[in-house]
Length: 266
Image (cartoon, rainbow, N blue to C red; front, side):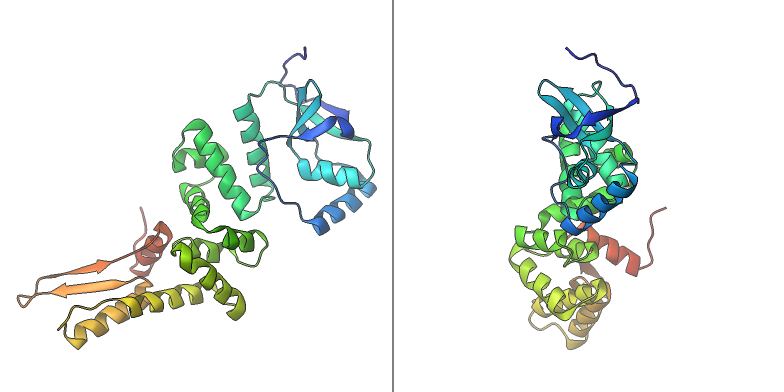
């Protein structure tokens, strides 16, 4: 039986004894980028060791799958590795996730899925997940919202057809409308701000105004809806008292409203 160790000693491990971990957050590897890394490895070798755990059948890969795959393409028979047999399954997942986040090597959807899994493993709040990986609560919340995207839109995000900013906005749109708006972003090459404005205009057109409401109030509602990029309704009585209501569909939209009115958290 292998002795558990947290030693950082680097060892050369046969590549064919290594298998990817079952909980790896990363699923997509760009073939062109992988080929470039393989060329670099042929010239300079593997600079950063991978992280492994000992198993009865060989070694489980915890971090560095891209390097391992590129080393195979480069024709290497061994790869430098650090053996971490001191880690539990949950701790091993965290090691791999944090390395991928630090290297920014995950797609947006892989990041979202990894953060969700981390929260489930340890029953963490968004803020606690952020503390665990060295990121802000807003970072975590923004990525977790992407899980509200329907699969076709998630694929467009992973393939780079939609930027993260677009994805965050679309995550606040109903499932039926996400694909249509995503297609419009790509077809019209919309910026994030342009998408927000078009969504706001669309929602404003769908507002149902109360019968008999004066045209001035209706115009004010439309103008406020355009300015805040969220549907706005205004109720006012003859005595001057009333209510202004702003409806938002996601925390991202709320953040946008707060920014537009000049509010910033202390």
